[in-house]
Image (cartoon, rainbow, N blue to C red):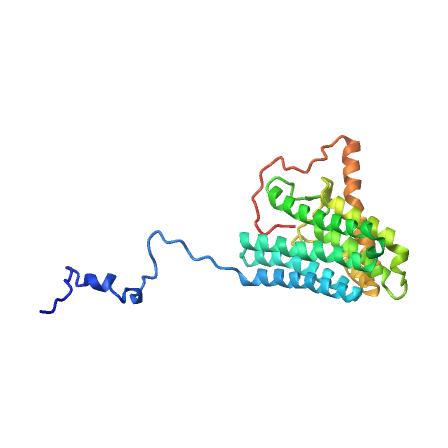
Length: 288
């Protein structure tokens, strides 16, 4: 005699729950105690991916001896890297994944790419001293990013602890861009020791405790005098006239400004440490 599965009081057979076709049973949409599914925000990470592509493109162009394209790719990566965090804050899409992804992108765009660009342009002729200088810069960028991620909660937001990696990259590739300008056109062999000094200076400055102003306390929503708007327009006009000759001196001034602030504080007897004395809320989108 055939047997039938015994039914429970609620009408659901036991064999229907644990039988051969139990995997096809409908799973409830919400279960108590279930962890929410984590996703990745598209918009800010798209900017980070574009910045990563800029660094990769700079490496490829440097290997093909197209240094003008390589330098501009790094500068474009700087712009995109500055936008991803602001886009994340505006759209409220900050995440720990985005912060870590941004650091990895910065390592390629502002660590490996500038080191390879300046090595291929002029440091190759110095032999071991050349690639050692390029490695010091690359290692300095890696250490700078790792220290930033670990000290983000204790460092004063008004200052960077050491030269930020985008500014260090601009210091290196900006020099290459200016030297390869058709109006200057200096041979790499004539500037190899200058390139060596710049790479070492940028790499070492990234891992120092010298404070560099971060401009994070500037409020762009406040009203400003009319002369400020005029000066901004004047600066953009000067930049458009000859970008290589305008950009690199600006980053040289910024690269030396940290040492000036350090010496001023030390001479006045003020603390030179930029460790916060008061607790501030942590913004996960702030990195570099």
